[in-house]
Amino acid sequence: MAIALLIINRDLVSATPDLITRVDAEGIILYVNHVIRSVFGFDPE
Image (cartoon, rainbow, N blue to C red):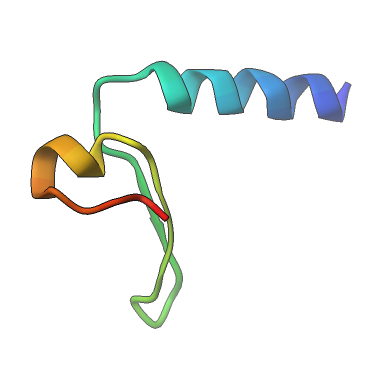
């Protein structure tokens, strides 16, 4: 069940046209999806 939810979440994040980020309490960026490339011109890796 948990793995299925992770797969669904991954698919939603990769398919959305919205910029999604994950930042920790100190402001360090932990994750950005592929949309960062079209918004800011940065590679998400």
